[in-house]
Length: 224
Image (cartoon, rainbow, N blue to C red):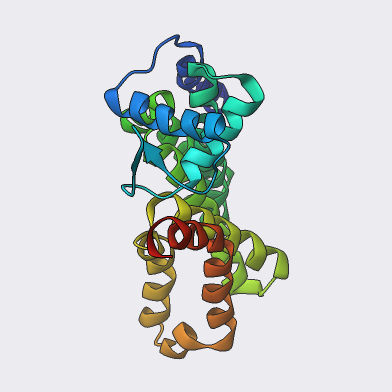
């Protein structure tokens, strides 16, 4: 029970960023302007800053922030909310993953470490990429592990969805973080064939399919 109360307390501290009337770094202002431009221009395909094409980061965080602006108005609260929600998802699946490997207590300890990590707390308040990424990578890892063990369709769909979201947040390198643990375990038990088995080729393809909106937008803005 004490672990649960400590987690709740830490989440309340994390949530203080939602009440801040001003954003806490220059990057936050910069990204907020790009998202606001999406809303005001009614153009959700192209990323623009100061009237110039902008290709530094993928679209998903800007889409989510623009949607929040659309629903709640342009404000610091609306900017922070999507990243904060993904930070909570990351905490939940850190708990679930540790519980799957070990037990309930270990899961709670893992979640407590997550929500009290200074960098992640700052990311939730300032909405750095980590706030989104942990909310995508942790559930992806969890569901891929379940899929590896059971071949559940639900696990396949959710794992590939969160992998696709991660791709649309930070790019292709996130697949290293998501899949490296599984690949290392297959190599350890000498099940090399799993890497290119039909089951996992389907998983890779479905992950790319979920990320298709990002590829289409990049083609339309830069390559068409």
